[in-house]
Image (cartoon, rainbow, N blue to C red; front, side, top):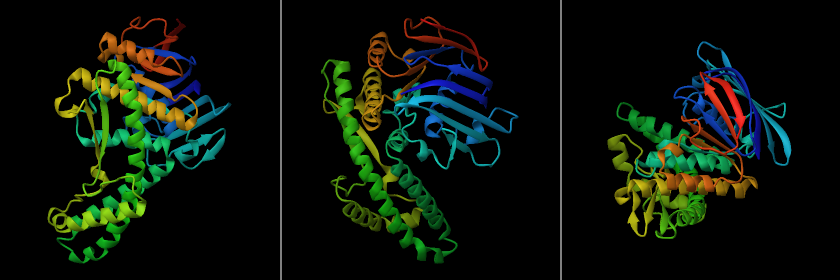
Length: 371
């Protein structure tokens, strides 16, 4: 799987640019705020329809322009393919084409160009709050399982509606009549999320443990444990049992939710915990241990996607190597001997013999050469 060519028009700070890439490693160099990360964002968005930076599609359209465009030529699923997105600065919905045929949703392009992004913020994902770890898991699962994305969207929609009911009931108690209906649906969809997550975290933890073992020479025992609603003892239970458990837990929090006007329980509170030889990483791990574990998680994510699609996902490293010491840099680079990789870096010549080097300045390709 590889991205051979990318065309950008009015995307971020790119006015109009066409770029061709090496099937192996592509090193993107340039000073800060020149468009290196914008390029990785475009590649990631092209294959997923999601931005790892923007909350609205309009944010990616070049300032003062009415629309932006991304188009890529890809070799994937044993054939040449094209993907094209058109994004609008106003409220008009985005448009998507695959191989010249208009598509309705990003689910229609699943598996064409899966990517794994690793950025400096990810190095500390294990030290921050649970929201960051849930976002990491949700982004990975949405690529692996389009049905999960549909369930997650539905869950968040119901959760938002329930939140409004809880806030409104003080002035309008009658709205509580429909609360049981929302709670029931929330538990049904929430059970699906938990089932998907349990299987994902099991596979992710097993793969990450292998990478971490290679990284540390087997000196630490890496364990990942999924944390969900407290009365669910087995997240691998049938959906019906998970729904029943969620209903029971929600019933116990009914009065507290009314008093606080907040949704206090459910998979929107999920998290995962990593221990190294029995020691909680978040509480007691060193900076080096945290970075090693985060790298292992990302490489494990790539491995799971490779198993799912039968091809190596494109790996995007956004200035992450500069955050690592020489030993960890070598480990990461040794793990990317296969597949297509994009690495951003501020210092030309920092990494040599890595394939193709492209210098970006103010949203333009200034020069390129093959190492």
